[in-house]
Length: 464
Image (cartoon, rainbow, N blue to C red; front, side, top):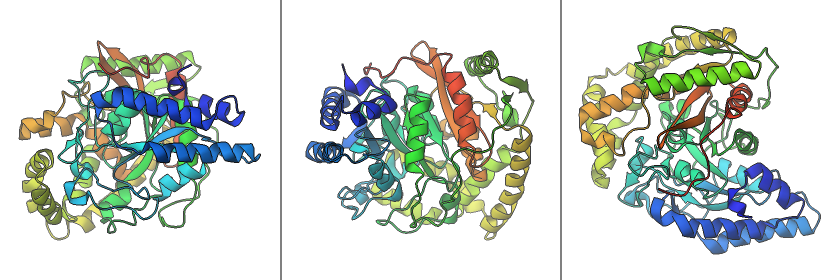
């Protein structure tokens, strides 16, 4: 049996009952990495001796009769923009190649406490800025389903890795789609949790500005909804280092199984393949006993996306530009150049006004989601982009931001969002996004499991 093909849930159960050892699982994962990562460049740093040492500790704990944790021996990957003790928190930057973390970030520490074995670190674009993944330090990550497509970003390495069987669960981060879009592009599932659900902090780096504090989260990517549920429970354990962490139960009150479909939120012009995927997901839910209603629109999403950009551009943009110039990354420089006029036009009180208006929009969405507790939305207006589309000029950047309007807008309200992959158009993945109220990841996962049961693309896949 190829252990790397198993779900995290199945593998952890086998390791706990000792029908498989953590060492065997680690060796299988390392062999798979050696076999295919050269074609993907998804994992950009790994140390086999440390992987085997972690596995040996799990096997030793089992031999002593100790409980190894819910992720007992499961190989996982960590994105290079969070602290992992002994590794550089590069964030895809030559400027940070020597920024070696002295301690694990809370999310890494939680995965370890749950028994996970860290297989390696996954690639991200410079500064984790783009929906495409390459940089001058680690190079270019490929989509295992089609190298002509972006693997997504910024967790492109994470999505590429988990799709190809390099680890069973991947850690990602999401401030404007960086989990949800790579999952969509690589044909896996990805969960952006609510703000405060998963503790986060990088001791190696300065405190982040208010925009990222309010919108950036860590979460899992995986090949099954059950594995996302398992990973979320592990990642969401408390850690006193993150004051934003909130002690909310993972499962909220039960509700009637009803969902709401919105095809064109904010007037988004979706392609026919995206509409077909959304209607297919609605039919799958209905076949599973859900009721599904369709509505024309949602609370203001274009304004939410504009406010998200204001909080980003108005808080430290000049320093980011200067760092990008020192780094010299073409993708980051092109993206920042496209937004420079907007940044320079912001008034001194832009952040204060954006934060004030954010509360109104968050309230509007909270009331709306109380009436429509499970919302089916596009991930993107388009199928996954050609790789490095945003390097083709400002019009291409504008096209990407328009297509990914929901990736940018929804985080402003701190909402959870789940990408469910549902099929292929030729070799190109397609799927949808499930959104629920704050801290109702359980509703996203409940609907996601029913949709998943109707079929998903084959995975893991061998790189094309």
